[in-house]
Image (cartoon, helix red, strand yellow):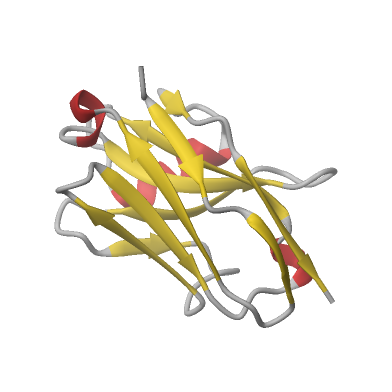
Length: 130
């Protein structure tokens, strides 16, 4: 069963770009709020991006203007376009889904930072070298 499956990680140099994809099970994709968080060794988990019902994105300050979250409803897939990558973006990136009362994409950033999302993928490694 699919649940949440990430792909697209890899190694790039500073200034490069990567696009992550997360295939999501239908019953989750159609109803849950979706987002991305990252975890680097020795650092706190960080909610990176989350997507509103209308498709607009909410972002951590550290990635705002460089990352873009989007979704393809025909493919039940969530994306994270990452541009102008920096060494500090090196981390394992996870997609996550949650559905709780009064949830918004902005609040999902906090949910992911706490590690409290209902569903989480297995993660994909992103390494940015200087």
